[in-house]
Length: 335
Image 1 (cartoon, rainbow, N blue to C red):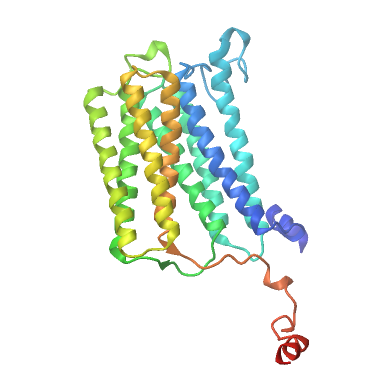
Image 2: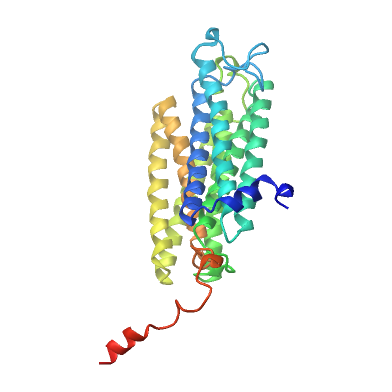
């Protein structure tokens, strides 16, 4: 009976989104995940980490920032508000994926995974404030945002492909090289978060002594070393794909990754030699998100799951008339 159906099932019975709409909402979750990474960095770089003194409210007496809190309160509260926007976007994706026929449970699971990561990261953000910007919690906050970006990219990819069993487009050792590239880039991202935890941008001017007790220059050098590893693996993968005559799409994506990593390296050196200016660091954080997206796309492009079914089979013609040859056409061609 309709009364016993859950809200998502009721929506699915009344609304049939197109496959293109589902893909667009999946892409929107990727865009919002990148925005959250960048605006989270802006909170730290503008010394607004404690712009709201508590959580979940902004102050013990007010949900929103007061005029006395100035720009720092607005920046911190703005980032919290964007989390609400992110929840709406993820919610639209979940509803669209659930309402789409034929139903694809893998998509709805990925959507719910995004939702729960957002919820967990919101709590981590609250703990960050309540612990006075503990550098370890700050780093985990960024890594949780990267986890959200990962699931969002997977959702975007799955929304544009079929549900067949994955079929390798290249030999197994080539795919393993792709996964090695993903692993190295993941390590690069983790080390980058540690660099942040040891550096001078604590998120609040009163917390400059509250940093991860590691030598900043040494951990930065380790970060640079992993950049070279990622560059080397990217070049190796491109030459390997050419040697095995892989499809054009993976080779193109590897070139896009190389360009993104090269630009990110330039930004990294600029920020280092300019004394870590906030604006350049912000671009570096954007670059880290884009590099991660490119790496995931490269690895996912090395397998195929068949074409996406654009239409619901239940809505197609019940008879086989569409597949039967038209007599007129056959007759005309035989003359």
